Image (cartoon, rainbow, N blue to C red; front, top):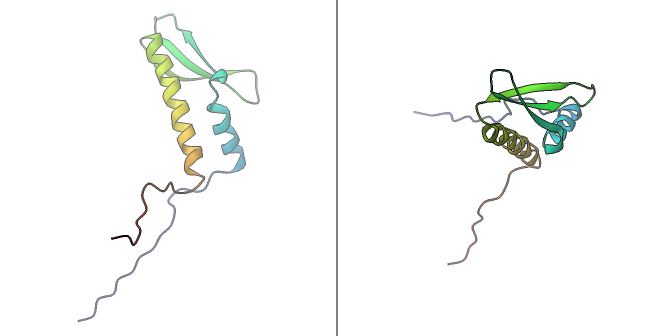
Amino acid sequence: MTFLYRTQSWTSTPQPDENTLDFWRYLVEKKNWRIVQLPNGFYQTEYHHKDEDIWVDVTRRETIDGAEAAIDGSIEHYTKKLEFLKGPKIVKTFTDEV
């Protein structure tokens, strides 16, 4: 009996274009974010639109600390996305040493 083994590799998501990369680079700068308090007492995180003079709402949190943590999490998220585009990160290599 003969078995055929076949493998394929591909990326399931398209590679980001330069506009997307510029947007991610913009979002990783905390100076482009703000927190506003809503009438219901919640805090809303917003980023300043890169091309227009408007603020875009992102999340709502119960506390100002929660809102700032959400911004920090977004910055970390986009920083990781940009780092990933540089290629795989080597975490361990093996040698022929005995």
